[in-house]
Length: 141
Image (cartoon, rainbow, N blue to C red):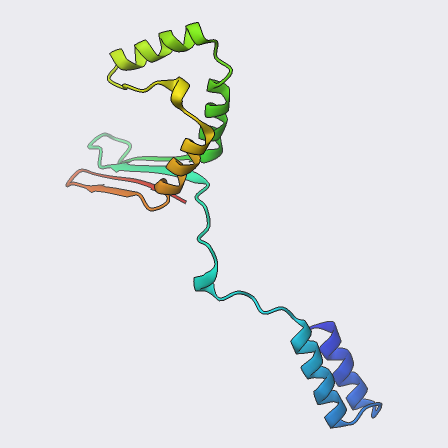
């Protein structure tokens, strides 16, 4: 019970106000309190972490292998800002190595707004892999 309601009820108990006056005061207090927005009208929470969970039934002595990785998406944002500080000559070499490794991306074209769009799309991504010996989950939280 909030402090204002308690005070009004105490005034009623002490006879300082009538029941009708107390009711009007309580109504006024309720009207002043802002209504929380309905759950469906609130925007969904933005993901803060990329989570990778691996559980593999390992026939070894130690039992199953459990890996639980939680990567802050803020790290991705910071990486994009850092990429803008790489000198153009070095950036070209990095792009060549990425292409040679099978990642055809030009880091010069990577902009913070692209990362935000990527992170927004990640919110709905859930990867679940189940087989007889292991389980892998990748999701955002």
